[in-house]
Amino acid sequence: MFDHCLYFNTTALARLVDKEWARAFKPFGVTPSQGFMLRLVLKNPGMLQHEIADELTISRPTATRLLDGLQALKLIERRGTQADGRHWMVYPTDRAEALHAGINKASGEVTRRIQQQIGKENFEETVARVRSVSSALK
Image 1 (cartoon, rainbow, N blue to C red):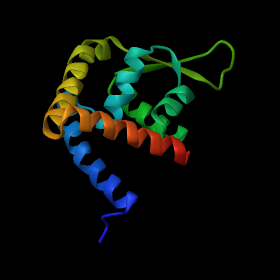
Image 2: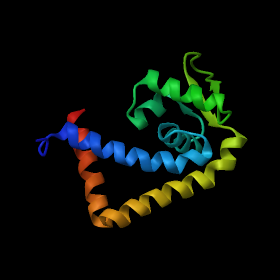
Image 3: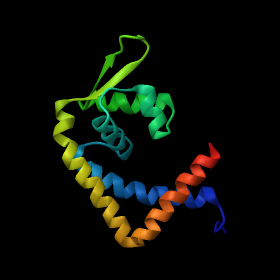
Image 4: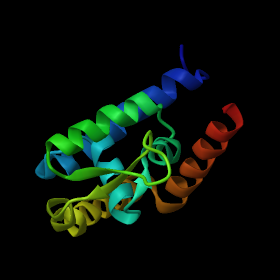
């Protein structure tokens, strides 16, 4: 019935993939959304909140809620900018830095496991096509 429905098939895939990432990030006490945000902050300390939202293609209020959660876990800290008091730079804490290698390792393991299940070429083609469709629909 839904063989040709983009919404149904991408949502079904997202639920399956989300379960994999939830298992991977559970030992670190973060959700998949928080885990990806934390990885971004660890890679780019000092990013502005709106840059984080743009990079993750999420709304600014959603980014704020995720950052609030990471801050409550003492994994990030916000610092005001000199140029504009309305903008906040986001930095990982020492606690986050201690998780960095483990989170990256867990992420790599999920990617490898999915690649093994569906084939590396299929994985890469699927990611490229999904990114292409997402870009075209923006």
